[in-house]
Image 1: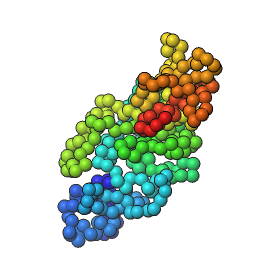
Image 2: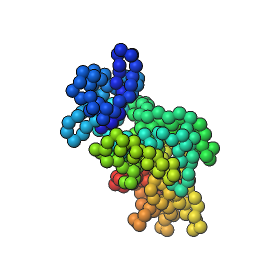
Image 3: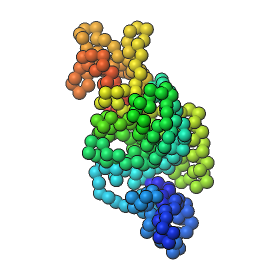
Image 4: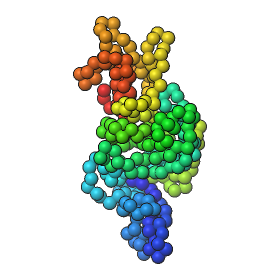
Length: 295
């Protein structure tokens, strides 16, 4: 569920933002019924919304559309308070510090848009945050990402393999950040409590940056910085753990080490026959692990 949306005022011929709390205050009035019949997701009137005032999930949600898993219309019916609050907190920043492995990239925002629709590989997606980049530090990243960045906030709905592959095919830079446990919101919070909590989260993002992972494993470019260690192995911090590429003692293959697990010498029955092959597969394994999936 989301807690904010827009209603269309026919008399003024304009869209106005409203909140779940504001609608609850006028429940039972003629004005409530008037606004209820003209609820939209944004101020462009593209997506109809409905208000739910009873049950465990209260707030605004889309009218049922009956679409597939990868349609932008099927996402966001039940948006948690934590997801919405963190999404809005990040989108309020004019400078976003991205923590990508052991590297920090400062993104200076030219323009930002919430819940932007994009077509990738003939599928429509609705991305939490779209960022038009003014400049970056280091400056090379602006060109690497073609001056834009697509950012997904992971609370209960994560980026799946199909979406990651579609964005890679279209060469669109997709970054996912996982909401830390200490950044959550109480689901039955008041409006004043929500605003206060969001300001706290904004300050956290300003101070500590936005941690996450890039999905570039199926692309020609990579935002992962591999470094050569003293013992001659390539290492990188991807997502939320370290990865090391090692050479087999018994043949020409390579393995991937992460955490305390035994080296991974193959994936889906295919061995890693080169360092570059192992690196790319390490990035894919990092994506699976970041989203709490089995390897």
